[in-house]
Each structure stands twice: as C-alpha cells, then as structure tokens.
Amino acid sequence: MKIFVVGCGRWGTFIAWYLDSIGHEVTLYGRESSKNMQQLMKTRKNEYITLPESLTLTNELHAVTEAETVVISIGSQNLQSLCETLASYELKYKTFVLCMKGIEIATGRRLSQIMEDNIDASNRVAVWLGPGHVEEFYRGVPNCMVIDSSHDATKQNLIEQFSSNLIRFYYGMDLVGNEIGGAAKNVIGIAAGMLDGVGRASLKGPLMARGPREIARLIKAMGGNEFSAYGLCHLGDYEATLFSAHSHNRMFGEHFIKNQEYDKLAEGYYTVKALVALGERYQVDLPICETVYAMLYKDLSPETALEELFGRSLKGEFV
Image 1: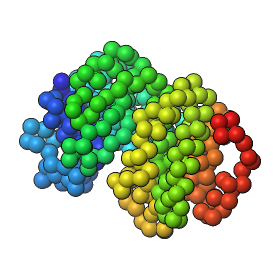
Image 2: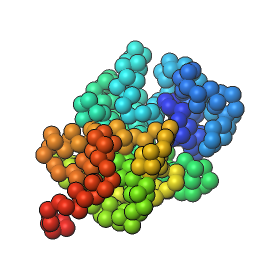
Image 3: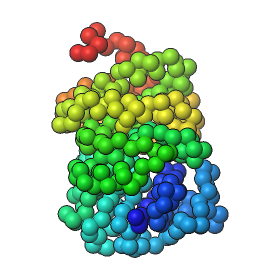
Image 4: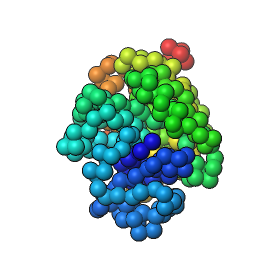
C-alpha cells in the first residue's frame, strides 16, 4: 500500500516508521519551515526514533496525489485548514486515516466530521485511536489500538493492512463514542497531572472511576454508545495518559500547577474548551472537565477546585 503521512511530530513520525516497518511504501510529509522536518531531513532522526532509508521524506504536499491512503497526524485545531489546502488537489478514491485526538473548538465537530465535510464523496475516512507511546513502541513494547470508520469495508481493510505483532488492532464499533472518548482522555490526563502537581496522586483512583462516567453521559447524549467510554479509546488509554512520564497532557497539567513552562503539544488544553461547550449544548454535567477548564482559563485555584468538587451534592455512584 502506498501511504502518505501528513505530520512530522512525535506520533506522525512514529506512524511513518511503523507502516514502513511492516512493508508499506511510505512518504512522510512535513512543512519546509518545520524544525522537526528540518532535523529529519538532515539526520533522519528525532529525539525518539531513527528513520530507515526506505522511508521517503518530502516537503512537497502535492505528493499526496500519488498515495492510496493518507494518514494525518497534526494538531486537531489545524485540520480544517489542512483540508482547505488539500482541496486544491481534488483528491478522489483515497482513504484518510486520522491519527489525532481532539474536537474542533469553534464548531464542536469531531475530526471525522471535519474531514467528511471537506472531501469528495468517493473518499473514505477512518480514525486510529487508543493507547501507546512512541518511546515504548520503538523499543518493541506492544499495545492494543482501535481503528473505526462508518464504512465497514474501509475499517476491515485498514486493520488487515496495519496489524502486526507490535500493534493489535480492534474493530471500532462506535465512531461517535471512540472519537469523543479519545479526545476526552487528554483532559482527564491534564487533571491527573494537576493532582501530581499538588501532591494528591492518590486521587487518581477516583479520577479514573468518575472520569469515564461523565464522558459516558456525553457520548450517550451525542448519540453514541456510553460503554465506549470504558473501551480502549478512553479508559483503556488512562494508564498511558494519567500515569506515564511520556504523557504530554499529564506533564502539562503538572507543569501548569507548578507554574512551569511546558512546550510540548497537550491537546487536552484545547479539547476541554470544546467539551465544556458540548456539555452545555447537550445539557450534560461534566464536573471534571468543567473544573479543568476553570483552572486553565479562569484562574481557579487547586484548593478551591477540590473544595468545589468535594462539596457537590451527594448522590449514588452510578446515578
């Protein structure tokens, strides 16, 4: 399969390496102005991974026209802009695989919705979600992930083409729930980092229990299967997001509490704005997301945040 990967960050570079390693013909694209791509062009290395000579590197986006499958791994808030750029190539009969987790702030659209709103009807869209860190995959540590799509044949083909002993893929069965769950786990990751920052890591237990409950409510209200919150795309990704030193969202939350700068992309910072807006739209109570939002954007103190969460009305655990 000829694959064009858009995005030369940590995850995009790994995906290109992985798909090349299992026998696909892969081209990795990055903007000429990108420092990540400049380094890869010069050394074929970044801080995580070394790329083989069999993998093509390019700054030319028009090379996308030659691929059967286009894998996209960029900041979620930049997807609409990328779609507008890709439109000039009039792409048809391609499969687009979205390998990022987020929700568009301005519209509340899931990423597959953004893609489908902008491409020819002959194309197909899928999402690749679930747990795993580049650092561990590159060392040969396996994990389980999910591919989902509204087109069953597309889903089946991708899983057959992308599976290996390193990544066991499951067939996604709920595009709404998997996309919302995958995006929301980054917000819970920030909350976990905040708990680490204030020395309350023991509260990650309640966070792990209550986080999926509120995300399940939102998924159900949006027409998805609430049990998706307990699958690989949300709860199944908690270990990698709430506890790992590799987690950008957890690290961002901890640095935020300690008033320290953090220069890595933490998608949860943007996603929480979209989730709070969706909660209001669908009239769903999202206490953890709302608290993280208030701390990030309204200067709510950690002490006040915990007081407000613990001071909420008493209720049954699964009400």
